[in-house]
Length: 265
Image (cartoon, rainbow, N blue to C red; front, side, top):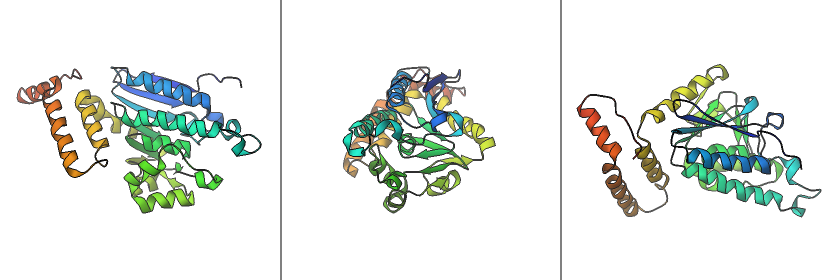
């Protein structure tokens, strides 16, 4: 199959905000094997880039991602090919890298975020949505099942009953409804969406990258263990953070009434 050009685009602004664009607008940015490979490469690149302080995932053409490209995944009969299963395995690996990345990750959703696009959205630390967006798991409408996050991420955001409502009906929520459900952090009309992204991301660019990493790692584990184990994790995280150069700088800057200069160490 002929490769497409620039299905993933990477940008890094001077302020440290990186943006990874899905760039198949003619297919509503649906996920092909090539797009997923290039997405994983971009995720690895931004994770290793010290100048990148936060990462936004967006879609070209005013739509986020409409899931897997079924034209490329299925033969005459779905079960005759293993391509769809491999895409789910590769998606789960890539999206887990996003979830566990040291830097904060933000899904900025316009248009459709369904199926694989929905899985990408819920794998980010935060989600912002245009008011008119259409968001949901959707797999069940095609008698399919999502293999990259819905059962272990979605109930943690919105609870078991709401997760079942989305997964068992295939219903789509608007961006405003997602904000009401707690599925995204904020929503805004299309003409104010870029401003929302900039405003929401600014705090991540001003804070200690090291403390950001430690805090995110600890919070990600917060529902994975018993209370006593999590108390131990908090104690260990406190010890590591409080011995960091950024912690010394943060306290010194406060006492000296100046803006801190972070080194990320």
